[in-house]
Length: 383
Image (cartoon, rainbow, N blue to C red):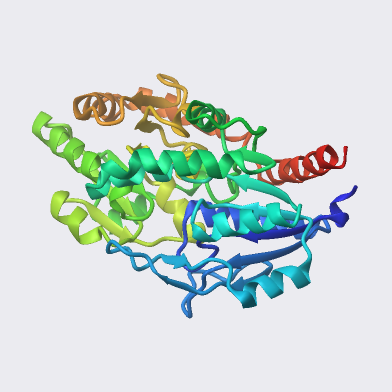
C-alpha cells in the first residue's frame, strides 16, 4: 500500500473556528497528507466566523455551544444521518480521531462497526481541566472513559514520550507511537527580536520581559502565573510581564497582573517578533502534551521556565535551556525566574542552548511519520 491508497476521515472537535495548538497541528498534517497524495476529508463543528481558513475539505458537523461558560467552543452532537451519509460516500479506509468528545466516540464506534482502521492522535490532557473549574470529582470517571476510548483504537500517536507513559499509566494497552510537532524556523528565530517594538509597549531596554503566550483560559495556569508575578514583585525582581494572546479569562487575568502589557492576539511574523522580544518565557500549564509555544520560544532563543509536566519535560533540559519546576510551587517558579532575570549571561546561554535544541523540530519529517504509522497500521490489519 502507498500513501495514494489512503483515504482518511479526520474528526476534530475544533478544526478551525478557534485557533489553538491542536488544530494548527492538524491543519499542518492535512496539508502534508494532501501533498503526498493522501485523500482526506475533515469532519468538525464550524462557525460563520472561523479563526482561519481550513486546509482541505471540511464537512460541518452540527454542534451546540459548550456548557460551563465556554461557549466559544462547540460540542458536536455526534454523527447525524447527513454526516453518516457523507462519511459512507467518502468510504475511508482510516478514521482518525483527535479528541475524546461525543463526535470522537461516535466516529470510533462507526469505524469499528464497519471494520475500518481507527487511529487516535492525543493533543490535550483533558483530565487536567476539571481542577480549574472546581469539578475535580469528575476526574475518575473521565479517566475511565479516556482509557476505554484509547483502548478501542488500532493505533495511537502522542506528541512526546511522556504522554505515552501517561497513557500506559492509565491502563492503555494499544500500540503507541510518536507524532511530534514542528516549528516554523523562518518565523521563530532570535533575529526577530525588536527593542523598538518593546519600547512601543512601554518596556524599557533594561527591564526583563517575562512572557506568556497562548489563549487566556484558566487551564493554562493563569492563577499560578499571577501568584508568581506577585512573588517576584515582593522580592524586588525588576521585570515586566508581556502577555501575548486573547481569551475569555483576559479581564480576570488583567486584574491579577495589573502592570502587565497585553499585546493582544499576534500572528505571522508579528508573532515571531513578539516571542523573540521576550527575555524569559514562563509556561506553568500542565495541560500540554507537547507545548508548541514552548518549542517556539526555544527556537526564538528565549529561555524557558515551565511546569515539570508532560510536554515540557520532553522539550526543556533543566538547567541548560531553562528550568523545570514542580507544577504549583510558586516559590520555586519565582526562584527560577529570578535567577534568569538577574543573570544576563545565564539568560543568553540558556537561550542559545534552547535555540540549538529546537532545530530538530521540523514539520515535514514530523508529519511524514504519521503516514508511516498509517501504513504500518494498515499492514498489520492486512496481515
